[in-house]
Image (cartoon, rainbow, N blue to C red):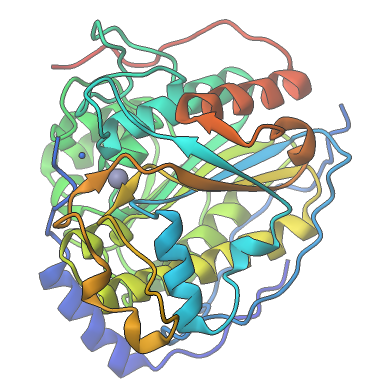
Length: 408
Ligand SMILES: [Zn+2]
């Protein structure tokens, strides 16, 4: 598939990337937070940045084919993206966000066993289908490992990928793969991710990937390891691949963008075997926790663009189910009474930057979306169950295979 990428403003973006390199290590999400279409083997064709500024992409309608088996699942998570921040972003954009073209919508309850959830328990719920305690990754309340969605997909022969703007072993991608009792054990989580042989892992976090021990592990597992946007755009990548593009995480504005990473992941994962890909815009939560509305809107622009790209890709690749949701709300965001862009400001945050228990929205489009999402209100554990049902219907049952022992 040909990409429609445009030229970067290289110097400006290099400077931005340097700024991001120094700013990106901040962590605020810690408040205890049958008809398979075949295609030839692919190589990535992402050769340039998708977009060189942070303006909103225009709203477009996409028509994804529904009457086909679910071959691929793309789960897109806006960390901390409550429905009101979606509406506020639309006030600033002056139009609908790209997720509004997805024909099915419901609400999702997010609480963990401890009440308001953190990203770890919520990711575990969406990945494994169990309620657990905050800080737990891929384990139930008894600290027993529960099959993750990537393990489930691997057991059925699918390829797997995780893409985030946070560090690769951060809570949300971690919950899709690893089994640990504490989300902050980044080195252990990364070890689990490499052991689990996730085919594509893109994000920040070279702080963890660059250590001599991890480099040995990455090499032994047969991964290509890249660290720069140029290497991502060089277009000769094969799976498995790890791309850690910053020492810490990556705020909006740096390169590669979330869309660049997602475009590369889609090209690499697409093939006869099908895939599961999780994509997270990680910094919506962090900018909300910082009570920084301008920053939050920038992160929403990043996610809106990535969803637009993903829907356009899925429209061209029938058999793809796209799900967009959030792990929880952050910020107690309110929509201003007078819906003007200037009123979307820091006064809209009402929870002191904390996560809340407010239900989040879920949007679905593509293969079997209308059959799979029929309720107005579901629980975050239902997302795991729905994805499993979809993959079982296409690929059949398989034995549960936990790829890593629980680490403490
Ligand atoms: Zn979160």
